[in-house]
Length: 357
Ligand SMILES: Nc1ncnc2c1ncn2[C@@H]1O[C@H](COP(=O)(O)OP(=O)(O)OP(=O)(O)O)[C@@H](O)[C@H]1O
Ligand SMILES: N[C@@H](CCO)C(=O)O
Image (cartoon, rainbow, N blue to C red; front, side, top):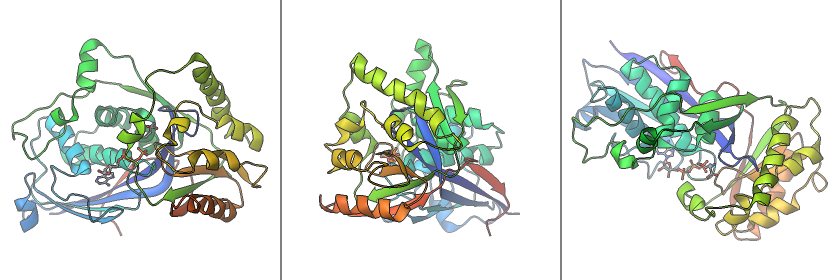
């Protein structure tokens, strides 16, 4: 008998200006895993894989994404959850077809979506029955800021934080990822630390569905790690207050029945990450400051999406004009872009039993 299920996981945009490592929105661009398990007639490829998986992949970065289960982020994540719960491998004859339209390393949460998909995959094959909050604990063991993964898992517009950890929990959560995620050198009887309970807390804020998201996506990658390395380790009181004030207003302003462009635009300003990231993204400061509700009717706000380099605009109309003008501005810095009009994904990640049509 063949067991089949599908996992559908949205992309996300983190920060939304002032909410550095705090705010995220789920976006309707879906990483999809079509999984089938047939223990009685395993394919040759799954028999050769160290953990019984035949992995196929289409979509963004397909020439570089590894297909061996202890090298690929989705299956490595799933193996971590299986190993932490005393299951040493995927079932014999596991086939996973991944379709991924989320561009890699562009600030649309591709790694967060891969991690969420991996945890949900393990939850299904291991039959653990974890709820989404418990699944988030495992995600947080791998991606240690909660903004992308919470938005991806839960959907909607979310604010989140990690709870205070005891010393022991801190050591567990912050250990080297190589001690958690398997690699080709990992001994087969290895059992990594389990995730502490209730690591994250989140709320969903209201979002006016008239507000759409324009993602202008430069054709170059910025690795999140590199984009975090350019940030200072300390901030002035003024800069922190600047962001907190705007964050408080923004979380309510985008849910208003009649969004007020100036309020949203001004509350999407940031002084904690965007100013420092301009060294990695040609034209960033100029673009963020020259697109306003006055220059572009329908524009509500503009920010760097996640760690960049994608620019995220919130808007109610005039989408083509806004996107094309940003693309033109990037062009003057020799940066080519594509763009997508996206909507908020309210539902978050889902698992559907039965084969994908
Ligand atoms: N579907 C996937 N399958 C395998 N690996 C993936 C997948 N999606 C992302 N990755 C891995 O994650 C890396 C990108 O992660 P990174 O955190 O740098 O960017 P991002 O998640 O796209 O952006 P941000 O966190 O700013 O929104 C890729 O280079 C790849 O190694
Ligand atoms: N909050 C994170 C999101 C990217 O993963 C950052 O801006 O670095």
